[in-house]
Length: 256
Image (cartoon, rainbow, N blue to C red; front, side):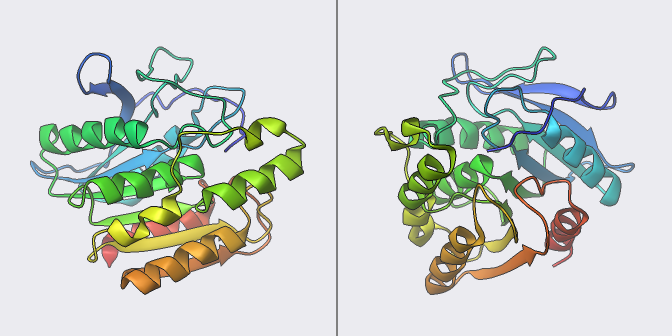
């Protein structure tokens, strides 16, 4: 979930759409200064954005494209989301109470990313997911073992049931207690490809997805035998995607 205010997309972003009618996924594509015929592709997946249209992922995508060489950075809109500037993806946005981390939403998004990698002739793909986008990224990776070789998972509500109970108490919001079709990312860890390079980041003072959730993900990933590491960023909360430590971790994910 993210509560950042809306800002316009970077003018250098190119609007792109992938997927069949009824399951289309839109996004904005950013490019590094030099791009070869077979560039690297980073896909950025935003959080739940309760109450507004998400655009903060575009700022991160632009920053990351400027940091990397021979790289395209695709900031997608999750199913049912719009950015308020003419782009939108098909599907059901939900209520932003952990109700849209479904197998179907992950399949729609995963199919679009696979198509993007093919159409852009990417030689490698990495995912960057924030908050609810981190949850969906893990579900996608479990569904499609060849989707990406690495992932940066930030501020993740990884253990769905405990996280929703935490949010119900934190916000005094009974909608977090309603039954949902979402799946818990933690239950999907044993289906993640064993070669996956997994970076987990969380703010030390995150009130939405506290560090104990990321610590549970790390333990599950280690038990799976994944190359996984956890970074707890001191003194920051939930909105960490544009934090320099996250940009640096994304850059390091490519360099590893």
